[in-house]
Length: 241
Image (cartoon, rainbow, N blue to C red; front, side, top):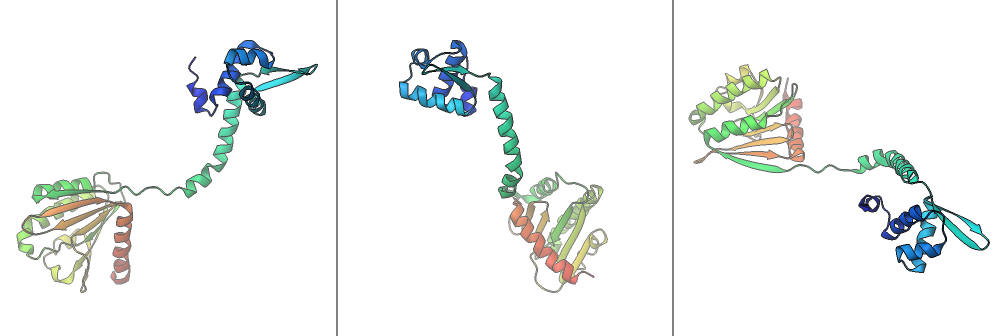
């Protein structure tokens, strides 16, 4: 018989040997238990005492001699059920103490194709009512990135179909260039420096780096995303009318 399950339940090797021996021997004294288990005398008596405390062995004294007997194996099941109930009482407290680990991961995409793939992954698991927060496009030569702006406009239509709420903060200097975008995105234009090329969605951040080789970074970090959201709304709530 595979006794590993009993080990997993917290029984020692000696407890298992003695309990199984008693199941097959019936009521008996310590002698036959010693012979059947091949355990040392002191170990057998200490283990019998533990099994008695656990309610798995009973005894009677006839004359001056103890006679031991295994109780029903159903008592093991009863003990498991009782321990489960006790554990369920403290489970809410354990869950309160538990701090979930922040999933952290970063991916790099390059070129226009990489840009589109990154954005699609960014909102892949979107739900209606999710917020998409944007610190606007900060490329120096915006004329060079007309295709990016056009794609953003198409991408925004897809976000709206999914029920995603979009909000953006952009420099006042880009107001004319983002005129068409402002028709479909709620944009706050400000006349002071803000982070550029940063988007936040759920527990993800999307960063763009414009240069000789345009690169895009998709970061999974609940903590970092929450920091950016807090900063976004510290501006939005103060200046949005």
